[in-house]
Amino acid sequence: MLELLSQGASAKAMARKLGYSEGTMRVYLHNLYRKIGVRNKTEAVIWHMNRARAHTPSAPVAPQTTAAREATLPAGPSVGDMALAEDLYTALGAMGSFLGPYGHVWEAAVRLKGGQADEKALARRMQSRLLWRALLKGDFAYGKALYDEGIGERLLVDSPSDAVLLGSLLLLGGYSSCASRLAAQLTDKRKGTPRITAREAALLRSLREAIEGAAEAGVATLHEVAAEGARAPLVRQAAMASLFHVYRMRRDLERAGSAAAAMWSEAEAARRQLEAMGVRPLPREAALPRPSRESAVREKVAVAR
Image (cartoon, rainbow, N blue to C red):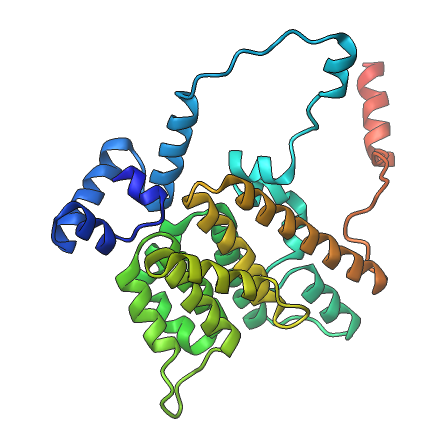
């Protein structure tokens, strides 16, 4: 089952391959997750990858001269390496704040307009950032918890774009039935129903195909969404993060690392955009702050005593 999960197989495909009903297969999967101590499909695949890597024997290394050793010294860990070892959120660090909804670019735009975000906008921003952080961290269970609390219904009305992030979390976490219900509501074309953009719909559709259906075609379409130019930057960045998780699930570590590196480049481009706007959120040089006058006086008194 772990091998099939690692190849991106859905519960339906696994049931067909192993000769069970889909319902029985889902029960076996939940038992598997509990047995190895993980919460969802993605964590099970990562557990399996780490275990396989630990049991792979190392090839003997031929002796090298000093010059040869220096020539082959490995570079420091890349963003992709850190993302695979930890998660995208950890690997991007402060640079992650330039990506996703309501990031630093949004803050700078509000300030430059001379306005100030109201409480409603700030609450929506917090909600969006939490969803974005969950996507970067691979915390798909967070999406399921929100869905179970009925927050998906509210997002459909208040913020359809956040509902798209929620749908991505559900798909990546293997909560396919919940994701299907949410996607049906998001793409409902009846009059008066909140709608998502064509790019957002393409993101959810290609992500579903990459995970559950025609995997290669879905990954190719998801890559197209992630490679879009200046259009729909939030959708493009969500597609990049989703690609990282999909490649990681498929054990295509090289492409997963490249997706993480592409996200870093995207964050760097946003940082340069901010500098062009006259904003420097990450100073290149900084000095330790001097203690206040009162602190210095108290310290002298303490020493004198």
